[in-house]
Image 1 (cartoon, helix red, strand yellow):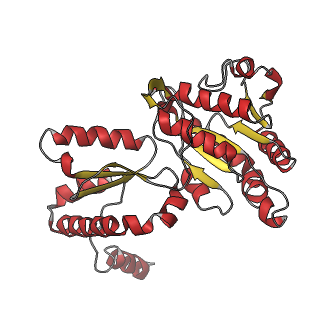
Image 2: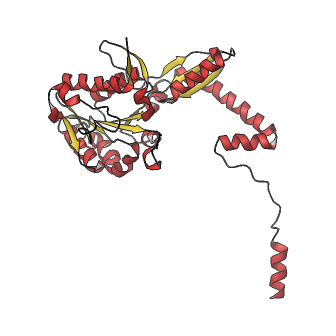
Image 3: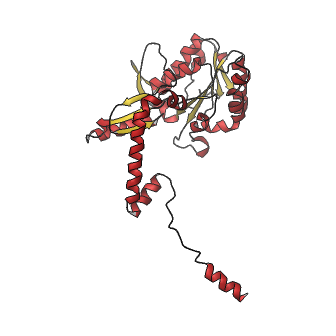
Length: 310
């Protein structure tokens, strides 16, 4: 094991896969000048001995994705980078109608093995056009696989698996991950897509999270452990949202039922809570406060009087 940042770990994954398979190439806007939005491609061309396999693209997400779909159907394995996930709506047709459906439409004669890396989430000094997390959109699109790593080790293992996958993979990476440090195996390894990870076993509390929220939930659990609480907590890491829910349903069924019970208890307690407490919780949950029912329209008598005068 070695301590590496997420940026270093995923850079190694790209290098190893490009050396292993000559059909793998990377393409993004400003990938040569600044090495991508987070500098995570710096020196990649030199490392694989062929700068032509790291392509600088024009500012056109539509062109980037469309060319990757065509290249994949022709036998290549492109890894394209959107720089910011907010750029994805520009190329939705290419992603949802071409990349997602071509293998099915051609009866399996062509495979769209491509990876779309999508740095997302908020980072300092970035506006609303560069900070969305859009993975939920694509989790509902048949034909696309959605992968969301939570650590340097997962980033490397899942990226290698995604590149070798014969389906289009949407690879969402929270921008705060790139500086995260963690243990990464020195030997060759991959992580299967579609299998959840239990990061902290327990019997009383279930926390189901994915991506950058895994480390934050673990940090919160450690803080509660000082009070003798979090040692009984469970944190589940859904690396791949849709496939995990399908394949691991038997494992999670008991824990999900307990989560449902806890939710019902919470909602029942909320109904009995004082009004100020309700308003605070509704504010934290971003829900509209309940408005008291009004019997009749207070303005009705005034309107009737005015109409009679007219």
